[in-house]
Image (cartoon, rainbow, N blue to C red):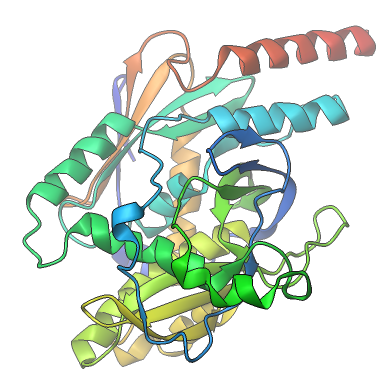
Length: 385
């Protein structure tokens, strides 16, 4: 890592990472709390927005994933920082009267970016994040301005026959077709059979908050979960049979297969981080007609990549992803006062870390969370004394 007083530069050496004989140790993510967004995208500190997986059955297939696009009940993208995650963490800590032991707190999406950074899709596949240190823990959020500008640039340059906005809708439509609001035994046949006519919305979400470890660093991150296979166990920290729902174009050529295997890297990373054991891919044609569903076990993707690594079919290696994430977390331990920017340039494959604000926490932390943690620390000091 090249470093001076202002900037730390971290080049990604894929050759060195690929040659590694061991993988950084990883501890299974365990959910310790959760939260929901209701149908109006209001925060609820409960699991009320869980959905159950139930795939569309014939004769519902093929299904038009564009159906209902004009009536999409869309949550407009905005910079929500870490607010909901911090609220859920504080609520949990108020029950235990102890701060969580994480050294890093962020969204699952940020950790996914770290894992897949060694294998960018193209030269524009960079990212920016903001980070700050508070009470011996680094809090990381997306630099929303950079992300919004990147998305606008991609949309303006899109020349396909179907807009990117409509293709994004296909994913939400698939979630609507493949989930039910209650367990199957408690859901009417009418609800199941009429899912294709439901107004599609992305406002309602269930978010799992987990504790995990990569390379000995304790992490806490939150992420949306699409559905559950059976029932959520009552035992804290028990394995949960979550399901990740994705759509992808039907494979028709060796190139399609290679591209899907690369796409599978992100599917795997997202599920691996949150402890989601099953991924369901909805196969669609180029016009957005859903034709079938296929299940993948997350752990088997890892095993399959390792087994077939010499066949040229896999453009990524899971241990490279994990080892780089571990190394980049080590790099961020150099963060101290103020607000820092984490920038990844996909073309040069270099991560940069530099300070953008000398003091404070920017908007990364809420006043409510800082005040809560300050009170908690004072209370624990009095008890210790």
